[in-house]
Amino acid sequence: MTEPLLIVDVQLGFINEFTHHIPQRIVRLIQRDEYAPLIFTRFVNCSDGPYTRFLNWHNCNCEPETSIVTELESFAQQGLVFYKPGLCGMTEDLTSYLRTSAIERVFIVGIDTDMCVLKIAMDVFDIGIEPIVLTDCCASTEGLQAHLAGLSVLSRNIGAQRLREVGLSDGSLAAP
Image (cartoon, rainbow, N blue to C red; front, top):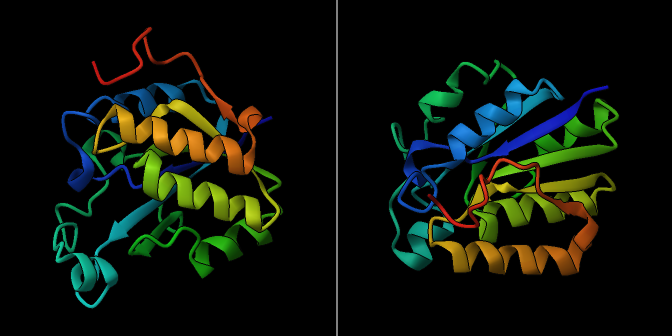
């Protein structure tokens, strides 16, 4: 039996020295053929949004930064890519999709563990769907410390038993 995999914000604008390994790990995870459907989110920094207004941060406001990474493009199906304006976790469209699909548990991977992954996992939890965060398929653009901080907060808020490794880290806690 397959279960949904929610791939959070694995897009060009979030690939750096701390996250470059995540797309290939997710590809290897998908190739196990244990997850379906594959659901993607794409963060878009709106010009009138809080990142621009309050933090004066203007990145990830258009392509190519908002594009799903090349390694995962072929897995993103029409209708299963949900756009997120700002830090918001669950958009109305994504919430509606999960509810109408009668999904009871969703596996979550992506970038940034301490921000978007955390927010989505907590929102999934709040709408009564069990989130399982696959920790070795997540990372933070701010590095290992931010990733671990996100996992710490998630452990407290959704339960440590919902944080799982899938064996794709090759023995390394941080980016190789």
